[in-house]
Image 1 (cartoon, rainbow, N blue to C red):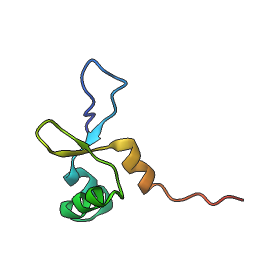
Image 2 (cartoon, rainbow, N blue to C red; image 1 turned 180 degrees about the horizontal axis):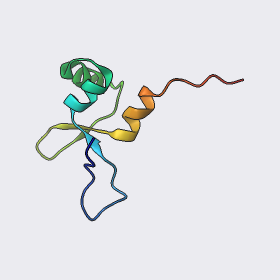
Image 3 (spheres, helix red, strand yellow; image 1 turned 90 degrees about the horizontal axis):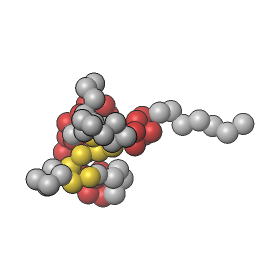
Image 4 (cartoon, rainbow, N blue to C red; image 1 turned 30 degrees about the vertical axis):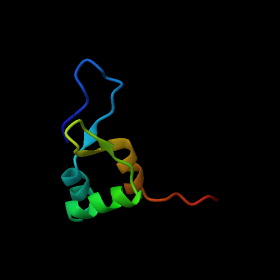
Amino acid sequence: MADRSTPGRPEQEALLTPSEVAAMFRVNPKTVTRWARSGKISAIRTLGGHRRFLESEIRKFLEPEQEEG
């Protein structure tokens, strides 16, 4: 996956499109949009009104839950 952080700002985190998130979860991009609207995942809005998702947050959802001993 390409690094989509803003050039010159390495502390800026990579943002994913709804299509990229959908591919990671193997769902339709409209499902990702629905999740964002319902608050299941948080989204950032671009100046053009498009949704973008923090890569680190999405990866947390994909990690298997660790059970406490």
